[in-house]
Length: 256
Image 1 (cartoon, helix red, strand yellow):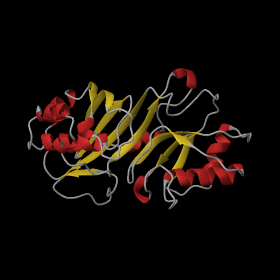
Image 2 (cartoon, one colour):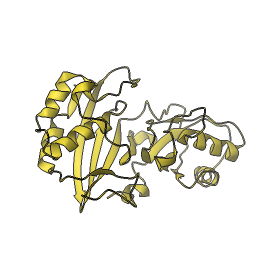
Image 3 (cartoon, rainbow, N blue to C red):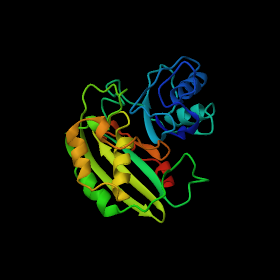
Image 4 (cartoon, rainbow, N blue to C red):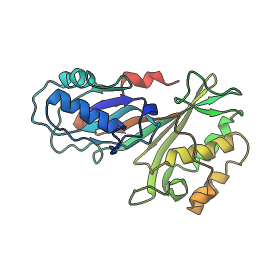
């Protein structure tokens, strides 16, 4: 299943005893529709307040339903801020996390002297002007395979801090920035920690070369503070064409 959600009301993706997570809501809805207990796995766990445009979820069941019936039936039991976008039947060889070639995120940022209002919780904010050329120069230093320990949260459970960052792309429409990240995988808080550094560089507080120094230090203490989760969106994974998974949904066009 491809699932989109607004993460404001939830304590992240992963199930917790409080039940206030996206996974808890998805599994409860699936259970009611299928009339059996269903456990799910996701392509990328998101933190509290982080949104998703195409979280990919897989589960096993003996229930026979058409793919679109899973979409409509599950959505009937979901809250308004979570929606299944698509569903496909696949083989037992598929694993939503292990089969992913890469994962994609976007950070949406409002550049304005006035704080967000109607966009509260859906965009990050910089009250100072950002210089794109400075941020792009810094971002280029992060591309490729590196030890990203400087951008890793202390609670990160990844076995290795070494990841391959394929691309960082910058788009601007009016006062809104959309910065896209694609990598083979991400560490806990990795994008938010990179964003903290990029914003300081874009505001002229640090030179672009500073981010290379932070990367080389392999120490979280050297980087900027973790940036807000408000503007972070999980765009979803990419898979080999053999699996027949969509690469995007209509929700992609929501972002600036």
